Image (cartoon, rainbow, N blue to C red; front, top):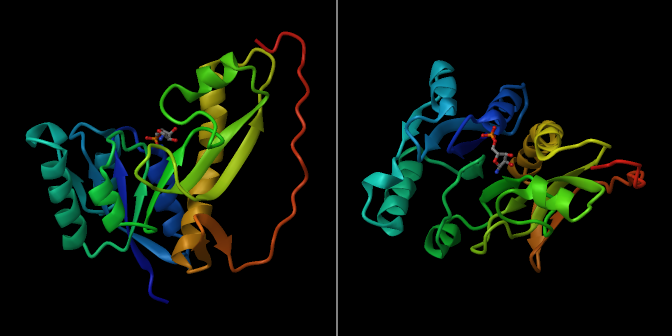
Length: 220
Ligand code: GRF
């Protein structure tokens, strides 16, 4: 089996990167980590990757005159490593249309909300403020508009009494670590098609039970 050469782009601690790398180390996983790139040289995830023998590269966006110059270096670095798939994992730079188009349908992102609800930052507090009872996370192919694009996988969790943005973020993060490897496995195995901006899987449909969360007293 030819494993898909996969780059992971980070900006910080890299817990999703760790989940992806750990999954890719399982026998038979259809992707392999070939480079980890951070736009922040101090990102903790870089040293974690380097310690495991994965090329770990900092491309500090502040060293470039503009986004195009930064993205040109990023693109060249990806080509240098023969990258086939890219996973954005807490990568905190917006990518322009030129870059996104070059990697169309090979570029994924994880976002800590049930998209299309709550794109952008501060998702958990906004979900609490809106009175949401079910929150979660999404893996999607990247399009130019922030946190948009065909959705590959989502996980939902219930909001519990007393939840704060921090407690929700922690539970959603556990779910993120499950769905990102799952989505990468599906994409890398070739099971995914995109039709009219919707993701289709060449696999049996899984029918799941609904997650039902009633409003409980003193939810927040
Ligand atoms: C995650 O919550 C991810 O969904 C968001 O940024 C966070 C990154 O966390 N895009 P980590 O660096 O993967 O630990």
